[in-house]
Image (cartoon, rainbow, N blue to C red; front, top):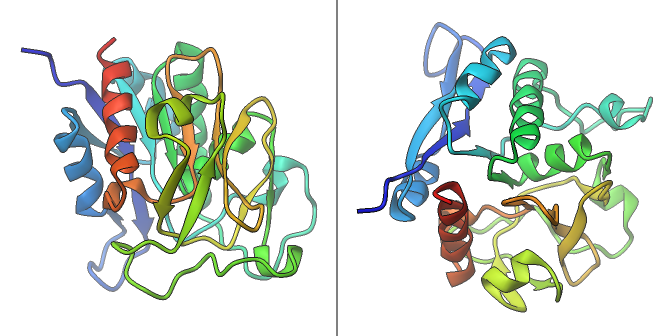
Length: 236
């Protein structure tokens, strides 16, 4: 029987109040379900950059999850911050340490939504801080319908690893106001009909893919294929 690879998933964090009178972590259940369905074991990663190497030494793969916050524009060299930008500095610091360490190890990495954006920044890329202000005629990238329903189609670019995994097109959900502007040392592998970059990858690494949508909702057969491909790489 093939061993189930151990996949670390980054957590979201909230301050005291609401669910708990103490600060608390959060992760949607379907992230873990998607990993398990693909043959992996999910483990949650707290926000402690100093322990990143210790965690990575025990993991077979890393998933940087999404969340309702943004990457600090200072990390990609922009002094101005759009009024819509919201930060979670401790989370970003921890995710940076995990991503940088995983890339050094050539550990399989999947960046999801904000995780894809942070991956692009780690690879020397940049972001659009607010799509509606930067792109005239852009699609609605923050869908109002449930995320188990598609928001739009994406084209997967030929010659990429993602194309080999999922084929030429996917229907995806959409929940973001920012997007990758420049891919840095990665290459673009998916685009929306309005030209917004929807995915990136790093050729030559075992598995390093970022997608702007949330494949853990498994709304397209390609979503299942992405998780399966990551687990295969983590077991390789």
